[in-house]
Length: 121
Length: 121
Image (cartoon, rainbow over all chains, first blue to last red; front, top):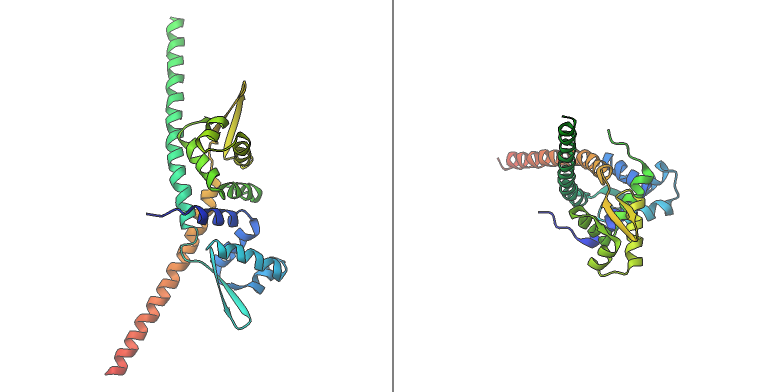
């Protein structure tokens, strides 16, 4: 059972709300990279990229490790599991509710058609 | 095929980054509600709740309709579909990558054990 922590979800959805940070996650999903690599790839200053990586790290989506002068960024294990679980759980409930509404609408439409036929007779 | 729009995902993930807004979505998943109902349920001022609903509405997660003096809030159809698709797509890729790493680690461990056995002989 996945435990939702409000503050964790706050931090990770906020981290996901930026297109560059999402692209950094996608990139790290392909291979680990240093902050310098990432800054180069995204045409960004080192300082700018450090900020984005910091946001992703605080949201537990990325881990970093310093070796000498290079800080290597990795996708965190189990990244996005809680976020996916939260979204999926509610989508399923909602989709059940929309199906129910569809059924009611269908039922009302059929009833209307039957009434119209009855009147025509 | 789901189309990801960067600005749509920016807005919706930002909308999801607040525990109250997530709770409002869950509540609207159960039943439609007026802003006054929601403000009461979440012990919040009308102005505060209006702001939250505004953020959800701009992110296309909620629709509202005014009838007389009452504004009714509804969960938007297809809410969270793009967000779920984005997360699922990348989780699958990453999980495949982590499985690959697991296999390599397993392979190295087995090799180490075999080497140790060979030395002991």
